[in-house]
Length: 403
Image (cartoon, rainbow, N blue to C red; front, side):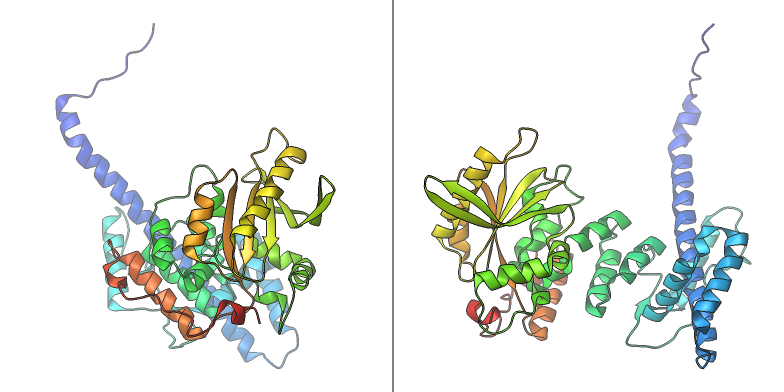
């Protein structure tokens, strides 16, 4: 005999939403409290280890020996979470961040503790020591309550202070999940916000909530690309640029982003009795297609678009597999003009993007101004805070940028 599903009484249905709300709120507060407790714990472990090592600076190799011994002992008692590599992360966490203990933090903790049933006031969550330092990012749990240890692990991988600070502030302000933070880092949001001339367009794109369900080439490509690691100085040719990329292929792949697979340089194409050579050919796993890259020293022209159309038509005819998506193109140039790009790419047989590249950073003040503008526009519903003109490069022309 099949059992009947019990039907809630009208009285139960009336108070059920309120009880559900309490349960969900309690779960959220427990998760927040656990996040704060873990971040605080790991920071303090890093503090204790750092202070002990500093006392024994004259003993060669003392730090490695201490971490090895601690890891072995803690793993036996508490599991793999206290390995030597993780202890090193905790030590670096203390070196790069400081936790502020303020009245607002204490009141936040009290609210969390009071909201969760069965929590005793004796089980303090936050026990921190504040250290004033301009070289360390300050954690205020009132503002950074949504950031957990996994967020900070990603931030530890950002070795540049400005980049680490940018992602730290944006992750807290925009309430990014760990996955979203990882996506922003892989998409080089910091570089794009600092270097892009189209700040409003970039902000509009970033305001779209959540990652796209299907990978789009517009989201994969960046603008501009930062190629300062190539070490190019003075006058150089397109062959010099290509050769420098091949010498620094690992860094170039990192700048391109994840899922790019290198297939070849000077990829040969014979059409009629003429030989053509594509500068670089890649395959993108997420887009599932060939990616043709053409390098240009000067300003983007209609001829560059026509040449890429020829390359893509040949690839589609001779190198495209049916299970793949159609090949797409990326034209990397030292400068471009917006109307030329929009008119030429709006109507055409192939998908392609035109992006600028920089072989050296613009002035530091320009980068800082653009980052501040990006933050203001992102926080404003209609972008009213950023009506002022986007700063130019103070006389740095396209030609000067690659000299």
